[in-house]
Image 1 (spheres, helix red, strand yellow):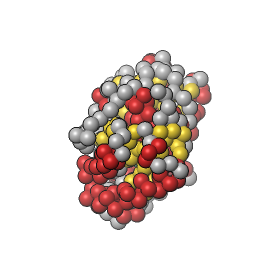
Image 2 (cartoon, protein in one colour):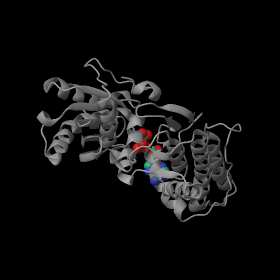
Image 3 (cartoon, protein in one colour):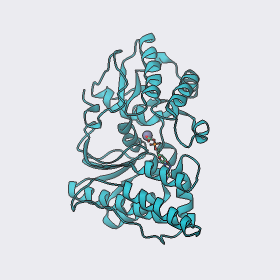
Image 4 (cartoon, helix red, strand yellow):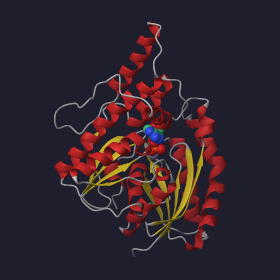
Length: 340
Ligand code: KG4
Ligand code: ZN
């Protein structure tokens, strides 16, 4: 029973996405309808606006994903959906659609943890070799996750305040850059230099936890101090300095986790995995240490239903099934999420 055709839905934040995934390996389709343009003028995701967009788009995106894959609901073995974490109203749209499809076509329903999805995007690049360590860097999460086998997640380090993506977005706002800030900072950093030498926050020796709020404050202070002195900041250098601090700590802790845990692979997951500076620094460190590094291609780093379908496949073959009573869980725990 290792074969499957899964229709998966992702609607936890500002992308409405539906995919058809074959055997947890092949994306027959992965349609992503982004709302970024609608949220830009507010400088961030407005939950109510996100929910409304999901409602407007979801049925079209389901139809597009099925027709692009060239399959019908009759061919589908199971319907998977992001159960959490995320914005409750946004999650509920995807979950309601998934339940309706599962009920109408009498298919099993499988709830998936959003971060498990991000991690499983790596399976589309390279088969997972256990044990492994995954560096998760998204808008809401910054974690080091140890996986001894499929479906088992042990969070060995996490942020004590802001997530990496959140810090990127806040620093971008300070520099009056458009939402989402990560890609904008990434572009500026590529042509700037680390002239500010912001602190590298490592916390207690041996800790795999992270903290980015102090760094964020340092950047904001640097901008305000310059303004008060009537000086102009060089955004490229500020971006490069901020990024250098974030990347150095992420890389250092991820490599140390791989070594301490005797992991066979280092995976990277989440929206910030698209960051060019982070990708280059991880590749350099992994090569120097002889570690196998796996990073999803850019289009699979951000939110998409394909990654949810891949994670769902592994839950499906292990027998995970949810009932139509399944609810959105905005604070869903990763460690308990794939329990059958
Ligand atoms: O995983 P994701 O798409 O959504 C969540 O699950 O949170 O991550 C979104 C985050 C945003 O904070 C965005 O600014 C950041 O990923 N991001 C980046 C880059 N592309 C997206 N951060 C740094 N560099 C990038 N190139
Ligand atoms: Zn995400």
